[in-house]
Length: 240
Image (cartoon, rainbow, N blue to C red; front, side, top):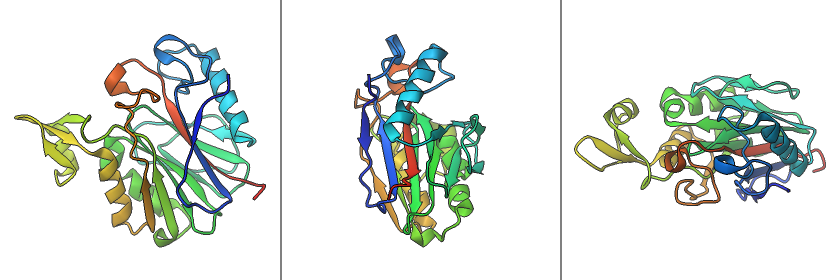
């Protein structure tokens, strides 16, 4: 079954394409149904591989570079598709190479420059966002921040994401937090990530406004516990 994808509408140049996969249209079953793209969540590896091949086919590109995400701040340049790389952001200037981040509540960001010659992905969990992954990605991209634009995909929203003091303290508090209890807060992680991009001078930041916990089209670790992973995928289209 062909994976269902949401086309990303963010005003990018014609040479830059991006999609976000839903959980529909894949080989996985049970908690991982249907289009799980995560390899470290307990799903049958053969089914995950089949799902990943289907997503590659859906992009029409030569392959997808996946990341071994560790909630850190490492960024890699990709010139050829290979085994998963331990990093939380990647960029490429080569058409035919798709880049992906796998998520189930964290914020997936796709970025490109105004000329449509560079594209990248950023995995923004709260640890990575607080730890500087946005800043590292913008610094590593070979384009001025003002020429960049970013799209923030489906992620857990500020109404659904309740955190404790350790997260509040490490993030420095501020307007993206609203008190929920004596020692808990509701944290608007997508807005926090958007503000990090905007503070760096990124020219345009588009928010999807979709919540993974509220919308059952998406995988959500906070809602379901053991579950699959969706992916944000971006590439430079060699046909444009």
